[in-house]
Length: 193
Image (tube, rainbow, N blue to C red; front, side):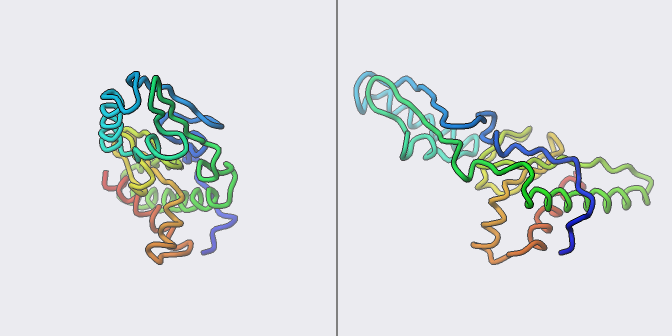
């Protein structure tokens, strides 16, 4: 696709360095979780059940909290550690993929603005939010496992760009056209709304 040098949308919110539904920041983050006084106590079981239920309800992977490399420490207290400095936690704000997304979004803005204007209507540009891992939207919490989505509650398209790797590796839909299609598809939900 010939996209370099074309107009880029300003309607991009890059939350990749602050993803996690408001738990952003750099470096390891630690949370203290009170657990029963003895290893394997009833408090630990209840806490695990609550974390699993919260993960199901809010759309995050409970193993990120309960799993390896941190997790719950049995005994007098628990500690949950999440390292947000991992390579998947974000990317530089000026990366080429962000420029691609901004250019495709600009193309959808120009196209839909023209179509609406020709019909005597005004098109409201959506915001596109880049995130990694998980994010909080007006539609609730979402993890990258949900894939790209549009939230009518805040008129925003949400995209974890690792989905493009999944398109390539799992679905065999590689290349810029497939990526542009994903963005345009989500914008289509905005138009429906």
